[in-house]
Length: 393
Image 1 (cartoon, rainbow, N blue to C red):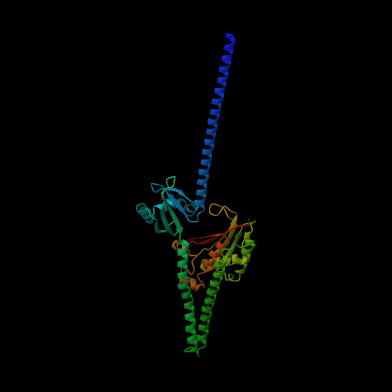
Image 2: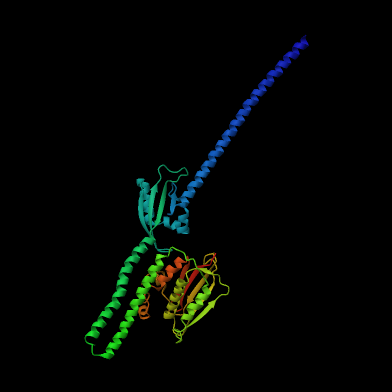
């Protein structure tokens, strides 16, 4: 009897222990499931925060204007793609600009947006409008302000170009018109009965009329080029053949032997996506300048070869260079050579029949072809004008 009761008690105890174990196991499973849910929730929140961070960085990078984010110490914590593209390693120099530092200080004192106009002379002349905007409250990463930098260089250049165009174009046309009117009055008056004087005056009038004709032609050409500058050309051009054709057109003009034209064209040059008429105009303008301003009895070299980085873009392309042996151009004039009506030596340019628009036309045609223009010169050693043009993909 005793053994039987002992077995019953042991069985009951085992059942109770089993029930307790299952209860504890269920609680432990619930606790484990809770931790798993918490971990999943944390992982989801972390993923959402990372996605939000990447989205905010993508939005910042997609903004067209350069953007700098400033931390509590007013140092840059982040920049966007536009800032890195426009300023590159010069962002530190931008922050050191006295005008920008003063704007940041005023923003910190007043906690209101402050604007400033900045001028940079190097590495290229640039006008920038800076807007310093406080962030209230600060961002989670501690960012307390942002600086938006809007490049106004193009607008300033356009304003200057318009003013220069009105002033220079009116002056360029006024001079030959005044000469023509004066000679007409002379022929109709004092020289009415003087055939030798009439012949001399008519020759000068023809020269002035030709100058006006060239000027108007160049102005119209430049207007047409600018009108379509945003549309890339769709033709395919054999640049080597085009160079030979343009050079052949100069042979009658160079028959006197003042300047000798030499071509150095590499074999197997790729085809160019371009407008053959406009590219012929580029070559003609560059060769004409080299012939006009080259040394008497010298050589004008035309070279064409595949482009090689790092001087030129890594994309496949051709570099055409026109090299003269003239007096060269002072370094201070080089940045302005492609401006309308800009002349290094005004008297010599007019005497050579120049309108001051040739290199401006070249620049806009190269821009339309998505190419690059480089002008190098050293006084006493001549000038090299190089043009990089992308090859057909």
